[in-house]
Length: 249
Image (tube, rainbow, N blue to C red; front, top):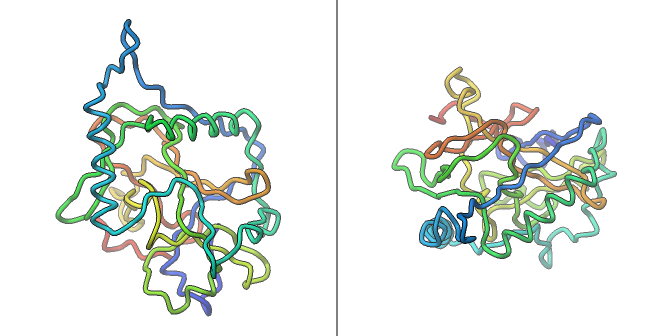
């Protein structure tokens, strides 16, 4: 899912995830809110509201409108341009079981039932995301959701972090996800430092690309068990080491 056409937009501005080409099933885990014998949330409504409020505050501070889907705006790339079949090398289709799990996750999120994540401001790293409860390996955390546009349209854009969505043999069809106006909690996930052993050890989330109903999507999923209080980190570079991370903590 990397972008290599540096003549259009410097690749150092584009985050790349990992497209899945194997036939191995993904098996997305749902985060289930623990309930007591009476059916009430163990975490408590107050704690869940605190988690949602932390995201709302971070989005407001960054002047970002909440959006939990890929958005296709006028004068940007249309939805019809997001054709997973155009990806160089192809993208694995999300299996039926995982698609059903993902749809259930999205339904739960519409009810405000998100994984236990807290957006916290760090004086050195800026806004970060940390687990506010135990999260199991392979738990779906978020879809990378923002405005979709053609990569070539971002040549003169001052945004310093674009997520590659589609890499086509035709550079004019390359798509990126743009984080400047709309987004969700994925906007605040931190990146690891690719140049230090300690940086690589921090990785507890993976960024994967899937073909869902013929369209390319980028998902953020826990890649190991995550303890309460741990910050969430993934590799901004995926399989193309072009995004500069040497200054990351």
